[in-house]
Every structure is written in C-alpha cells, then in structure tokens.
Image (cartoon, rainbow, N blue to C red; front, side):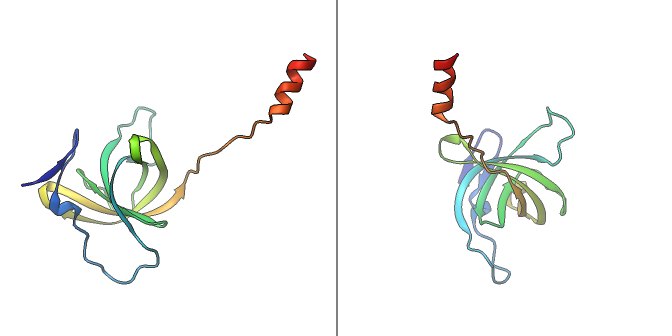
Length: 136
C-alpha cells in the first residue's frame, strides 16, 4: 500500500483519484495536493481544535478535501489552505455540500465557498512620515 504520509493524516493513493464527474461544471477545477487546516465555523472558543486536510482540487467556487473525520452535510467550515513553503494562501468559509467515504477510513468532502478573506494591504505614504519627523 503506497500512501502519502503526514504528521496525523495518512492518505491512500485511492483517496487522491478524482471522483467520477457527475455532470457538467461551471468552473474549471485545478488539481493538486495541498495541505489545509479546518475548523467548524463559527468557532466557539479561541482554542478550538483545527484538523488537518488535503486539498485534492479547487476552483473559484469550491474545494474537494480528504479528511480523517466526516463532517455533516450543510455544516460550515473555516479552511486555511497552505501554499508553497507552508504559508497561508487562502482563508475561506465553506459549506459541506457532499461527503463520501473513501479508502482507509478517510472521507472526501465537497465544499461550496461562501466567503474568502482577501489579504488587505495598507498604504503608507512616505511623505507623511518624513514630514512628521522634519516638523516634529
């Protein structure tokens, strides 16, 4: 049995095979294995536990995750997708729209994105800071 091993999530090769298409899709999916963390939304406490997941594919409207614990259809999750070097590349709130059991007691979750937090950039004007130092 060949598997992808992580700290707490061993994924069998069958888990990474795409699910059969159930119809036409409005948006193209991007395949690729990426690490993600997820937790229920809204969190009831600041120290709420997060779980590890593997992103199989994603689009602008949704994600497909492999997880160790099944989540009920309709539940809301906050998902942090990690990019190259482990930095957070997406921070989304999504609703579970389908769930299926796969090999090795793992589950595939189909998620519809509801909200994505975009990184905010603040503008700093160099002239204002310089003027304050010169006149202060």
